[in-house]
Length: 502
Image: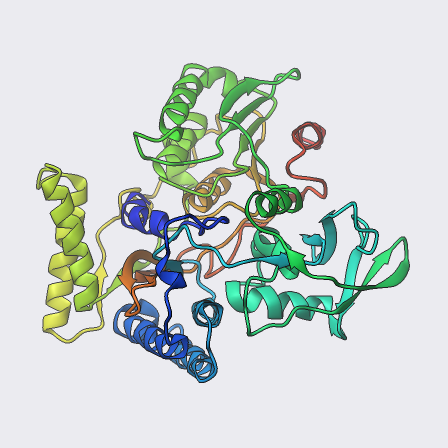
């Protein structure tokens, strides 16, 4: 949704992944601190902010939320008793935030240039389904397992438990394929996390035979780390494009839905939509159309709505739209109200008129929160239709289907936010999802950011909850046709889709 994008824009920049190389400028992370005291202070403040402002605390449909928050704090406070390093502070906080299993509850360093010294044992793994396999190795080190070897266990701990303990416990949502794809290489990366130890001996299977390997950990930083992570991840990287294929099908490649007019995606998407409109008749008559979302992590839902209207038309979308949501509830707290007022102030300073959609939206929420707080209510219920009109689907007779062939929407693990909105919309209209499972989000959204007392980190907190969303809480979109190959192999993927029965 457009307003989700507006509220998340600054937070997305704030919580960008820390750089993998340390800058020359001294970082506050290098200054002496009582890390245990800072951990206790920051974890307590993060918990208080969640209790004060997160919609889940008062959510009758999520009765375990408060106890989950309390349990996460208890673990962090126990770790604070022995934390003595920056790594102990950071990874304990990460573990607390990860315990919410919510991609909208985030944590970021205020110094994005800082990174912890990193070590590896000469190889990294990546997930292929549920299996962790060696994806890149130091070819000069014959003592490392070969590329393609499947992890069995380390130090007597099964591969499945290793992933949950070493990655999932500090990243959250380990039940999602997307998390395994995104962070699988961290299984054999060590970044000064004292709450887990470096493995000593691991067993791998190659060609049906198991072999044991003693691990020799050594530094891996800067460009070398980036290169190894890139090699292990093999994340799809595509360009924007509108292309007619040799068999008459069409491929519309959209690796981003960024709505920032100053960004690179905006002119590319604008040109793609214009070409799609100009060739609407050809698209509707084509044997098939591919909507390629590989690499798309979200942005604005405006683009996907435009594509849907171009392909299926307004009448079809009215009759085959997403199921209407039941409502939106905003957690009424002073901190959340202050965040909304800050956005209103920014827009006024930028000259946005009072009757602009953004201002009307913000003023409505401000008034609603003020009223709810005056009556000591935990929520303000916003029953007005959101910008995309999904609150209420009008009754409509079944119109003719204008698309002569199937529409395939190509997804992979990086698809989240507005990319998920696109998949929701297009599948409701009749598109067939192909490729791999998407990421997922909770029904808690529209985040604000808050500094932690140490000044070394900031966190993001959702302010509203959606009621009755067709796609469930933390539920990914699963393809009807699963591609078992490499999602970065463009030729193989295109050939596979072209050969699908229609």
